[in-house]
Length: 474
Image (cartoon, rainbow, N blue to C red; front, top):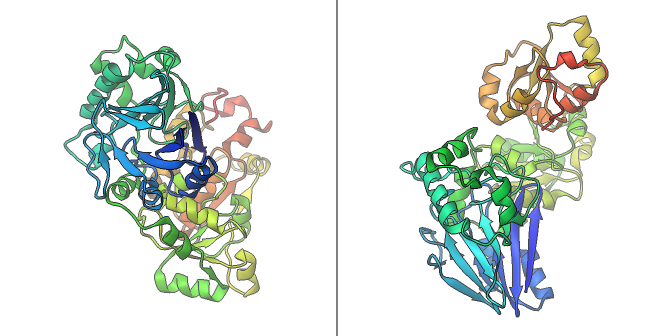
């Protein structure tokens, strides 16, 4: 028997590869399925099942393509009703995979079809639980997402179901069982997830607030709902793609890998109203970019921020990228349902400049320059675009919080005529923020390189300049 966790850091997502006696089950695969097929081929094994723990909100699963390419059977637990062929497993049913068995545990709460898969080894011993979004390391799945699909499912009702699932299906299992969740820290599917990607159930019973045996159902519901913020807007759109089906990843990749000259790129932008997405490093982008393009750097939390910043997953997209990374970017866009990349600028921005096309830039200063400016004019306006939770933990006195994740509300609070100095934690999000507002006509935004981290570490700032002087930097 072989169990392998395939963890994708930019999505904080865990897929799983289980093999026994020449048969393979893949749990919660990503959109690009060829790596799983290649892995099975190396093992001289056949992919028999694609096990889905629930209808995912934060990414598009590869279940449909993987089933088509391998003949594997797609499996969901009770209450699932997708628009494609699948096997509806019953609660308590045992699925045979080679010499092992996988027991289906229906655990509604995160969503109504949420299901965990309990692995029984060759001797029938319960060894691992693939817990999906029901149980994370340090947390449990948020119970407010399914109500976006069915309004009668309030978050209180779902949290109550989740409590029952944990108490009746998971807590009675052996402490030695290894928990393999679908997500880790950084995912918006929970709020207190650990950076660890696996743990024993026994240790989670000791450390996970949601598994505290002293909690009543009412106390559990209160604890789980406390501090939840609105989920990213693309979540329900990804859910529907996972339920209804989607275009083959092969077609998506083929369409996106269309190299365009500077003139053809410009014509495509004008004729299609495509969004120009520049995925280069923030400071590289600041020095020169195509007017009205927005920057979301590929070397960061790319897919989640694309999902949060681009409301329409059917939006046509034109890419400006580092040469050789176009396929990677198109793939990562498709992971969260953005399937309509229609081409990229061949030769990158250098080709655009050589063609004599117009470029724009963003002013960016270091912390030392900011200190000097602030000393000359203490009334300058500084925007902190980190999340409200980060801002409330610690921030520079007198700055305004304008969270990137609520950019439309944040934009409404900003005076177009004023000059603002903008920072986030490290410089990634501030450039996203400024590029989007610049494309909407805001011309007086200046980026602070290095963000809050460098401001905090700078000897130019005294601890008294911070509202809550702690060492916590998120």
